[in-house]
Image 1: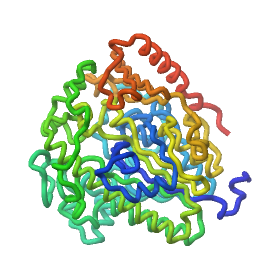
Image 2: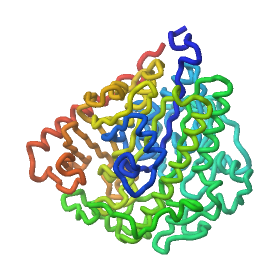
Image 3: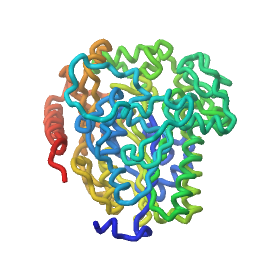
Image 4: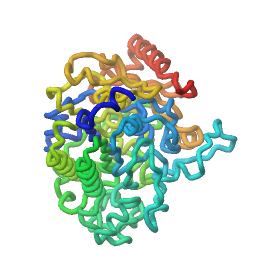
Amino acid sequence: MSEQTSRSKGDRPNVLFVITDQHRADHVGFMGNTVVQTPNLDALAARGTVFENAWVANPVCMPNRSSIMTGRMPSVHGVIFNDRSLEWGAATHVRQFRDAGWKTALIGKSHLQHGLSRNSVVKADKVATVDHGYESGWDELEHFEHYEDGIPEWPEDFYGFGHVELSIDHGARITGHHLHWALDRGGRYEDLVVPMTADSPAKRRSDRWWQVYEPPYGEELHSTNFVTDRTVAFIEESSEAGDPWYAWASFPDPHHPMTPPGEWYDRHDPTDMELSASLTDNLEHAPAYLRHIQRSAPKDQRGWVSPCGATDHELLREALAGTYGTIEFVDDGVGRILAAVEAQGQLDNTIIVFTADHGDMMGDHGLMLKGFMPFRGTQQVPMVVVDPREEPGRTASLSSSIDLAPTLLEMCGVPEHDGIQGQSLAPLLSDGHSDLRDHVLIEDDLRPALAKPLGIPHRIRTIVGADGLKLTRYSTGETMLFDLESDPDELVELSHVDAVRTATANERLLDSMMLATDDARGAPVR
């Protein structure tokens, strides 16, 4: 028996992992935003270490969520886009916690499987590269239709989670476990399972874009309240049983559609919204597809998730106001969860993480939403780690989403699984001035069958250096180079005028990609 599993339950800290969806780094008070009100997240940040320079491994939902779970880059764990599920047998840090005796739960959005994004799947016309041998249906647990008539049979272990309650969709569309929870509370099916179009019911809706509206139901039925309510229940039940617990509280908001319910819809006046400093950037030295997206009005989206341009500035203000409303509702939920932890006497024995899976352009460079837009709006995320044993602080040291898995494992004395590529951030909790990383690598991929018709390069790689130099290279050979220290808004593209620094960054990117090659998949196992 290992040292960890032989310890008493009281020696093992709980873990509360709070994750939001499509949440920019600067859309919280503790990162300098003075408009959106996030008092509970700000209080959490004041108790922990704020990572001011945190970047994703991939700026898309499924790849980065899988990277957080595994501590591995998307090109290594295999989920390079929202068109495939994380392998059923993938080693995850949560599974390590469960094997070491923690009671684990996922409440809210999972998106480790492609149920929400099946529209992105393009089936290959050839024999698969690997016959994984999993039973049929292993990757369909997040298909919303399985929940129409009740809760389906659920496996005992879902990537390490022993307990799962899903809120599968976004905006005001309610499916999964969330659907039956809402129906039990008096919700009407026709108000809950709605189309992702302008035909969805609403109490109020923007005249400019159907994706900004007030749901037809009250705030008590919204995904934020579901995640809050069920996370609190799990924490209370686990604490009463005396078990160390790991709660993954995954809020589907503020991802579009922007549908703050009830009082949260009127939290902000769109006319008060401050627009991005780079809104009018003409992207002169960017690849042509970015300028094409920039010219695409939201009302002309190819699909509800497709990236588009900030062509209507008044619409952008409405989207910002709606987004801030959803964030403030999430902040309220986080406050309630933290109050429940404190009520159980567990606050001093609970490690807490807050982050997001990726960001949103929200008008930066005249762009909206996310998807193959390699700017800090989508690539940088808020990140806080609270260790009750450490003094609070802030650090400008580089960090990546892949660092969270090894960080939690080290902090809790749980053994790492093979193949983790992230670095533990634990040293930065006691010394925020230390340098763990000299770069962060960001991947962004799309299969050629999808990329070619859209005119998007099928591979994009970004390297962010500790010196602030940020290079993006496309599979087309095009590049973009920015100096984030002198140009935080990424307005002055340098690769067309600075050959020396471009060569330096290209060499750094090559070295980083070599280091990111997998040494573990297929290796001998014990």
